[in-house]
Length: 156
Image (cartoon, rainbow, N blue to C red; front, top):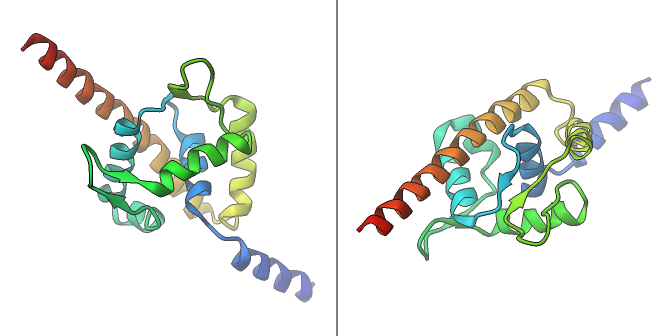
């Protein structure tokens, strides 16, 4: 029994939490369906999520944002999306490639793996659930901001 406990501890320590796994979990906990695949929306929403709460910031620490352009951008987020699509944890439907879909099967696979990724830590999983819901709101807010800005430009 002691050997099993040690092995479980080693596995927990070896399980690397990386940005791709965090994005998968955020998408699985985000009730927005589909999720917009718009860089201006995704990157700004993720940065706002990171700045919103110290616990969120700690989990999103690996996401570095550059501001050399019209909006903040994270290469970690840019890399995570195609990885998740290749792993079939999300889909990006043809022909427009404008949305990210996490269907029920994908969501269930992510949630099952999430327990392993984050060592079954209920506090961390609850934090990811809260982050996913908040991320959803930030995505909607950012979409609204961009639509309002577009309408103002058209009206000018």
